[in-house]
Image (cartoon, rainbow, N blue to C red; front, side, top):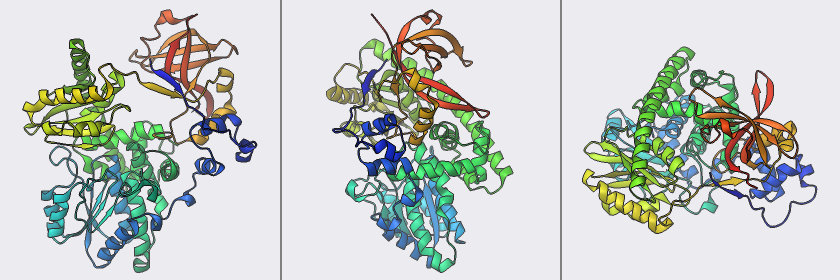
Length: 576
């Protein structure tokens, strides 16, 4: 069970008549007001999120200069190579760049590094190979901001180098001809400092597109790549406010159209109709894992080929291959998860620990990050999971909101061969003989910051909502105005009044999930609710018990018929 925290309203109340002016209910206005949208202008921008409200590239610091460097080099006859990361953000970024250049009749090279043999970021051997293929312009997307030596080598080889990235810049920047990174400089100078790599690529290539148009006689419609922008932004868990909200909302429309054969094929193999409209969560849990599986399992090239494919038959074949890789990934993930979970229990039985450092020699380096997230979800401790990799140990870490993982790793740098990341996720490398020293150092750093006792995760709630309000279809339709949900714009979670468990039945094949019939004691209204991984919390003997739940109500459509879907996020027993 979690600690329930209710959002605090800001000082002051909404102006009278504002809900009517915005054509929304007072309840929705209260929800948005509690989230800090406390002016008519902010509320209107949030609710409308229109594509014409995107900030033009000319108003983004660094972007016009970088676009000028690229377009001039292209017009001078240099061949461009785009270098992207192997995750969804990197692959969609690379595809976007190639789409824009192709529209102007320009051929380009591309390189997506192999996760195991090359690792993240630029490397000199591959740069030298691109030079041998005639690359004159190197454009990085979703990477490059920390690659001093590789960028310097590219410059030595005569390349024009432009780094576009969204990761935290180091104190020393690479010697590129131009750099685009929304995290360079004061946040207030950037229209949106939280762009994904594909968001950076979008605004950069919009400027390149405009610069090339007078010379090529062509102009690419940038809204055609919004499907890629939405996919990459959602997969990289970027904050869905401001410019990102506009981009993702527009991109979800493009994903619904599925004009790109690769997107249509991905939707098909993930169990959706090619013409289905997916919400943000469905994109994250259906489409993104299949692209990520390619990078995790050493076939990132296949994912890029899929998104670039113009042929529906070829796209379906490639998507089926990615689907098979994703199945392999899931099987490997379950194997590692079981072993890591058992190891975590053993460590905590030995003594109370503020953090977990787990190791398995044969665990897959492309999968340990997913497992680390699951360990954190269950044990709520900063967690590092390590495996063997070329005579070294390599791993991924995930954290909780109370602990800055990157800052913590800085304090253990003396026992690490390398590390990188941010507050909630990081990667590490170390010598095998340093494992115990690192475990002790990391646990001590976390203990110094958080104390020895484990923390209880908090669940942020909007307000109390009874079942009479939760069954109001007009209100549930209105909640859809808050879409897309994701980081920085969580789906609303409400606290119920006292409920009675009227009935209970298993849900799904695994036996881990449960369906409950819950009766609101005050209104007498009964709703069906789903509890994922809650079968043990609600055994058959729970029928008749009194509880309160933290829940999300939403409208669910099946064959055109709407029903109310209640998802249980947490629960509390009611005691007299």
